[in-house]
Each structure stands twice: as C-alpha cells, then as structure tokens.
Amino acid sequence: MHFNQQNAYVLIENLCQDHKGCQKGDIFIALKGQRHDGHQYVSAALEKDANLIVVEDIHLVPDSVNKDDLLEVREIKHHLSEFAGWFYDFPSQHLQIYAVTGTNGKSTIAHFIGQLLTKLGYKSGVLGTIGNGIYPKLYASSLTTLDTVNLNKVLKDFVRTKVKSVAMEVSSHAIDQNRIKGINIEIAIFSNLDVDHLDYHQSMVDYFEVKARLFRMQNVQKCIINIDNEYGVKLYQDLLSLKTKQVLTFSIQNKKADCFIAIERYLQTGFEVSIYWKEVKITQMLLPIMGEYNLSNIAAAITALLANGYSLESVKHALPFIQNAKGRLEQLKFRNKALVVIDYAHTPDALQKALQALQSQLKGRLYCVFGCGGERETSKRPLMAKVAQIHADFCIITEDNSRTEPIDNIMADILRGFDKQFSKYIVIKDRKKAIEYVLTHTTADDIILLAGKGHETYLDKNNFKIHFDEREVVMNLWSKDA
Image (cartoon, rainbow, N blue to C red; front, top):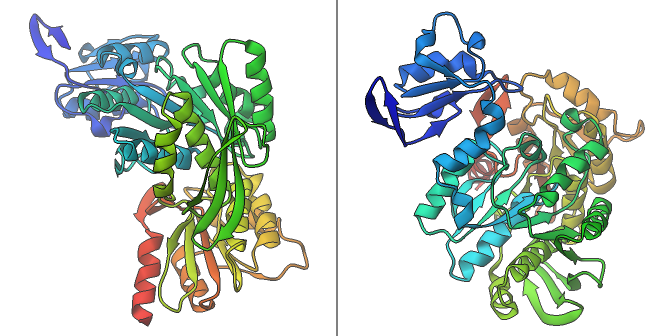
C-alpha cells in the first residue's frame, strides 16, 4: 500500500497492533483493549519509525506525544477486520479454512487435519495454541486465535507460499471480539463444551451462545458436530432448524453419526478400531495414538476432510501415520522409570479424560501433578481436585501460570475440592520440585501425568514468563540417575 504523506509517497508493508512487533514503514493501530491500552505505546511505535499511527481516541494518547503525527479514526475498532482483509488482499478467499472451536480438543483436531492433509501431499497451515506455521514446522503463538491484523497477515503469507488449506483454532474470545470477522471459513468444527472461561462469559449459556455464533456465520457452509457432548447435540439441533447449512456429525458412542469410530481392542501402543461412514464400515485398523477421546478428535478430522471432498480411500491410507500432538498425551520414556505423560489438560473434563485414558494402560499406580492458572476461572479449581481424587492414586498440587494472583489463594481453592478424609496428596508449590518428588517416588510400572502445561515451555509468574520445559526437567533428572 502506498500512502501520501506530506506530498511524498511512502510504501506501507504491514499493519501492526502490537508495538513490540512494529517495524519501520508499518502502520501502528492503537486500540483500547480489556487489559492493555495501545494508546500508551504510541511513543514506542514512533521510535520504531512507524510511517503512520492510527489511534482510536486521541485523548488517550500521553501528552508527551505530538498529536500532529497521529490519525484519529474513532470507529477503527469496528472496521479493523474489513481494513485488515482489504490491506492484505483478502487472503482467506484463496484458502480452504477449517475452523475448530470447543473447550477441549481444538489443538489436536487442527493438528490431525494438518497431519492428514500433509500425508495426502498438500501443504497445510496450522494456527493455534501449540503454534502457527506450515505443518509440521510451527513457531510459538501467544494467542489461541491471532488478532484480526496478524491473522490476515499470516493468511497472506500462506497464500504466497502456496498453502492450500488451513486448520485453525478459534477461541470463544476470538469470536466474541470479532477477530475472525471477514475470514472466509468454509468448514466449522465443534469439539465439546465444558466449564471454562466463565470469568469472561459469566455463564455456560453465554459461553455456548458465543461458540454457536461461529456456525451461524453466513460464509460457513459445512458444520461438523460432536454429538457425544450435550452442547454438541443442542448445536446440531439448532443448526438443522436453520436449514441453510450442511450439518455432519461424529461420535465414538453413537452408531448413527456420519462418522463413527468403534473400539475393537485396547493396545499399549494405541487402539484397534473399526471406522464407519454413513453407517457403513469402511476399514478396521490400528491407530497408534493415546487417549480414547483422541478417537473422537480423529473422527472430527475424518469428517471434515470427507465433507470437503477428499476421498475415503486417500483418508483411510493416511490414518495409520497419525500421531499425538505435542503436549497432548505426549510420552516420555526412560529405562526402568515410570512412564511420564505430558498433557495440556487444564479443565475438569480434560483432566478426567486424560487420567481415564492412562488408566487403560496402567500396571502400577497413577500419579497426577497439576495446578490451576491465576487470574482465570476459579470455579473449576475444586472440580479439578475432585477429578484427580477419583481417577488418580496420588496427587501432587503445584503451580501453573500463577500470573499475579497469590499462589496460596489458588492452592486453597484447589484443596477445597478434596474430601476431608482424603489424604493421598501433597502440596509442592515449586513445579520443578514437584516433578523431582514424583520421579523419586515412583516405579517402572507407574504412570505420571504432568497436567496443565502441555506444549508450553514457560511459567508465567508476576507477568514474567520464565523458561520452563517439563521435558527438559524430566530428562535432566533422569540423566543424573543414569
């Protein structure tokens, strides 16, 4: 884009909302957000030689800034998605976009879609919690769903590099904040809904309604719904009543679903399953993944690809190569040591499913190391403890991104979930020490679940992200014992 500044044309290459990523020649757009106010970073953007500063409200800019250098557009927040789409030449129009939403399973479904498409020979983009990029080469993402400017920018990069399809996670925050407005989403996938983010949405009714908005978007043509979840059944019925969408279902419980996966045999390396499409058995095979619920996530990916025109035969041949995503029941093994499994489970439902998944492979005892994030939904904290008490043999309560909330408050909320007579737990606030403890108190037949961090390689304390990779901690401790 060329911009006429004082009768001289300058080239504008990018838009940016985050002053940290602003470069010479960019347009910096300052918005007032829920937690941060972009107007306070105008000086920083000017120091980086941004060619143009667009502000939402010039009165929010510090007095030290020369207001003549700014352009005030009062309604910019409401039109930013259209502006970003236009600036980057509407990149989503040139891509097949699979949008995955739900409380749990978003990352795994997006990765399974990326894996399958890559195996089929197509260059596939993945956007979400675990990372962004062309699968499998992903770079870290600070958000589940990017802001509308960065989203359009990344999609433009995908178009330039000949990416055909994109599997992206869509959070409820992103839907509510219109980050995906104007994005040409053809296929929307619903995984499930569980208690989470009620600090933002206030109630499960509101949480569900925000999720449902994705599927009611005019450009969404095909809706892929998990009917093993009560909210999925409600969404399925609501969408059928619209009579304007193609609605397909997946299940590991209901044989009437469009895609149904039946477990024939539990194996230490995975599952032997029968896969049905439209109530016709299409194959029986070994799927080398952990976690029964991941069969539901695979069913979602299969349904999405078949709905988008990929053949049964090609998808069937790609399935045996599928693998768990990073931090999603990810296994760490060492000779004569307990199996360590790293999982992102940070809701009661996700924790229950992870523990139940590991029970089917258990010879000894099941240990659960978990905490809860600070400044986030508090009602789930005692529920996490209750789940751990029921499904684990021993619990280690520790830190998990306390942010600026006192860790003692978080611990107290969690401990309220244990029965008064329950004693099979210990509180170790330092997560590294918690891992050290559990590694030294287990045997080769045991399984240790490190829950909550998953793919993350940091701990957020007092709004500072400290490097912390559980894989490194475990392997270093094991190496010392070798």
